[in-house]
Image 1 (cartoon, rainbow, N blue to C red):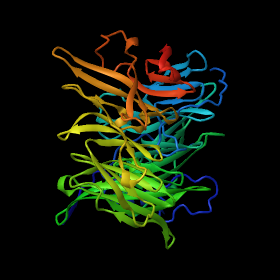
Image 2: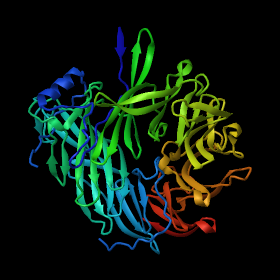
Image 3: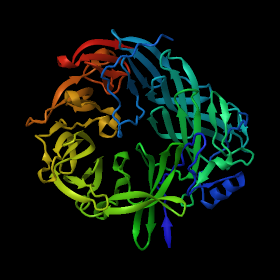
Image 4: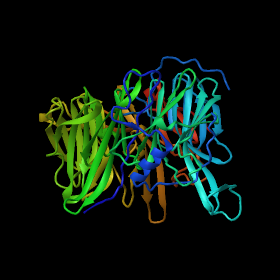
Length: 607
């Protein structure tokens, strides 16, 4: 007898199709078609995610722009070049755009820094929205956030005023708010509300992709269960034959993939797929979008199992179409553990804990079998990645190579040769203390690792290492790694350890930087400090990474002692560069620094 426990399976849907389409987008998918069929599918899946009731559905459907120059300007650190990812700060040649705590600030950096916009964003009276992500294009500034709307209902299940007496309870619906501003005038020109909780976004050229998950309401048969879109307040409801499902997935939620065309008329298109409740890992290449999820189960004969599912959606001239499906063993730690190159999909997974740990590298190929697109496993490397008990901590693919870090007590750094995708091999391994949580290709021959130094299986400081991967036979750390040691009874932490977008790279000028939080304990007090640290890289030096500059904004915050603070509006979150100047950004200030003059500060603006 088998007992199945679902912990974390995510699956997402077919993406939008624009215009006429010569390539069938189903190819293995089925349309729901009707309310009765939706009920049947949901019931057969044993859906436990019934939330309701929901609101009824209406079936009816500043300033002159800066002159932009061609100046070297930093971009958000992303996984795939040419595919942007949303972040709290964006920059162009003349402006810095930032969103902190629902406060949207736009600062002109053309000459002396001046504030063009400083506005606290507020949604409708009965809707609570928390903005957290930005994009910029040639024409638009886009602000995205999580939106929640409350409803009250009585013992009969009828919706009533939220200030009524004798309520049975409260209910809320989640959505993703997308506010679009004209990039020149900074006037809001369009608003979208996309159903569900936002999982991730990507921007490719002028196509903004939003992936969200919304609950299926089966509480009240009088209420339409379909997800609802809003465009400038006008509701849009998909037809049942626009909702798809896959026979191998449970129908617990609507997985909504929305595309907003950030040019012309700001069109919105969508596709919806019935899938599992929890989301997993999403990877986007220039060819496809991949969704990886896993299911945790127990079998009395084989014990605990982690089974993953991978679905692909391919970009074609007409839009995006279903690209295949396959199962695998283990768990994908993050988006960097998936990669597409030269027609093959490569993926690293880790499974189990303690003595049961197993790490694998899969290679898949897209094929078509009897009119159905599928993913086919063409090779598997399941021996030698990690010593016993070591799980995968970071992965980075680079063309025909992959570097993998595993850890339990030491950090084996592996080079894997993928030049023959049908026969991947471990080319070299290096054992060193500590582990890397993020890897970045500094150049063709060098990998930067950002993680922790360890001692006796505990972290003792942030560790920055460079690895020479020119030749597997000479794999080695390049110079001496830099370790930012914790003080006694203290810790250090940086967003860069889990969010690659928090790191600024200027490889041409041989530096990178990120914000670090530090704690200090003394006999009398507990201290915290936030610093933005700039690290210089010299591949020829014995100390290959050094601290080049430390910048703080604490001098602008006078409400508390200078040496005692944790989070304030002057905690630095990001830095960007434009031309010869570095701009260090907190929600309370931006300081301007001369890159060519030891990063000395030359200007400041406070909000």
